[in-house]
Image (cartoon, rainbow, N blue to C red; front, side):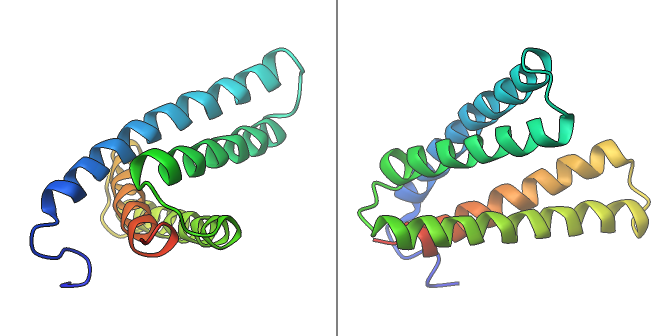
Length: 135
């Protein structure tokens, strides 16, 4: 745990977490807008629209987190690859948390999604901070 939060680093980490959450709101808005336009205007299938919107959202997230949240100068190819793997890991953790909450915990599926989002947010923030955008 000492590698995650070092003495005197908490204010910086809190500022990064706030920025990370704001980036999440932005990339969600962009991705969802693209999904809706792809379905409504271009009449694409929901799955294809979702894939396109998700991909654009991930690129927006990567760009804003690299430049604004973490002010990283890590090599582009390295940080993008690791960020992609961190997001994939976060998604697997999210899905596991949601399914566990529903099927083992008996939690309402809508509430389970909120739990999954929190697992995703924390895991991807820490993975981004410690792995993808490490200084």
